Amino acid sequence: MSQTINVLFLAAEADPFIKVGGLGDVAGSLPRALRAISTDDLKLDVRLVLPYHPAVKADGIKPLGMFSIPRGQTEIQVEAFETVLDGMPVYLINGDPIRANGSVYSLDSKLDAEKYTFFSLAANELPKHINWLPDVIHANDWHTAASIYVSLTKRWEEGARHVAGMITLHNLPFMGPDISAILESYGVKLAQTDLPDWARVMPLPLGLWASDAIVAVSPTYGNEILEQEYGCGLDEFLKIRRETLSGILNGIDVASFNPLEDSALGVNFDSDSLEKRPVNKGLLQERLGLPRDPDIPLLAMVSRMDIQKGVDLALTALKSMKNLNFQAIILGTGDPKLEEAAMNIHKAFPEKIKVETRYDAGLARQIYAGSDMLLMPSRYEPCGLSQMIAMRYGCVPVVRAAGGLNDTVRNGETGFVFEKPHHMSLMASVKSAIIVYGDKEKWKKMQLAGMAQDFSWQNSAKQYLALYQSLIKK
Ligand code: GLC
Image (cartoon, rainbow, N blue to C red):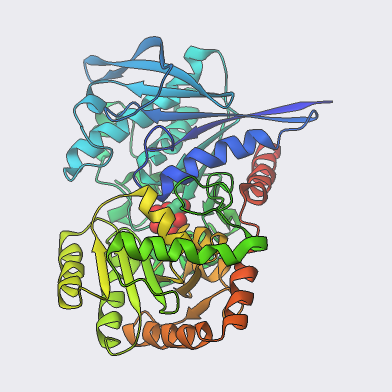
């Protein structure tokens, strides 16, 4: 007998419609990967729902209809749109709270609170209007977490049908603003929870509290958040929910990130033609205005400029290594202070260290294909995608043993791993990498070991499927 599992997949961003960070990569790939592992016996009907941010770009978006959700004495209009991505229905939700907020994430937390609470409520109502009912609502991060909470309270208060709820955690510290007053204005009561007091007004903790399953984006991160150091005040609560918490490693889009076909590269290559790779290094050095030298180790960072990513540690380490023979490129935007600190290092060593403070997907690909080492000294890293892309492109990662970095890079085999979030530890690791780099045979072996890793979405999709099945059985 064939079975179908309907999954309503909610996210604030998803590639190719709109992408700000790693969440966009995951929400763009995972739903399609899940549909792709459907069989004749088991069909996964995963449908993606996104806010219709003003910046969303896509062809073929059609209006689907309007409905309203009550708020106090008035009603708020929900405009639903529809499009298709590789055969997957995608719904876009619009309305005043979404229009009022120009960017995907606002610096004004009030705007974000209004926008994402509205989105979460509207997404919950959507299935009724499209004649398709989910078995599972799968939310991601704080932005959509309130939908899991609302779904549970509706079941309790209005006897709505049972829908399993789950949240994937991409970044625990971001729990969202206080939305208690907004929820109340929509008629949603704050339940008695076993959450700490400060947390019971925020969308992520409320969603986690109501979830049947919680997934961290790597097994190590799933364990780390049970500790005080990484638990952000929810570690005790998460320990109580340990049975429902698991870690599933993200994948990367291996079709898009394929050095053999990537059109952003000067020369394509794979593990059978690794000898072509240095051409990309020369082109990159030229593009950056660095001396063209195949033998000088070229270090790279492709990262949001965020304290999470340890950009400051990397800057201090590079400065302390100034007498060594290396080149470095740092690409990324974010915290203006970190951008400025990076620019200062570039000014101090202009012929050695280059800094590009912008988002540039093409340059990022050229960096993966042309540089020798990728530095990721993250203070915490739920999963991390860059280290996986780097390995696929023959660039050897130097990472801190945190979260997904710990689960994807093997010290001395596919990369270099250090423990302490300190520039001295990073520096020691980079120095060992530079020594191995001097031994061409050893280095090549490491590059090939990284390139041979399977980081495709298939593995993760199978684990999510098993989880959906277990939730439905309950
Ligand atoms: C967040 C995390 C990052 C993870 C990504 C996708 O951006 O910081 O570690 O890879 O989400 O899950």
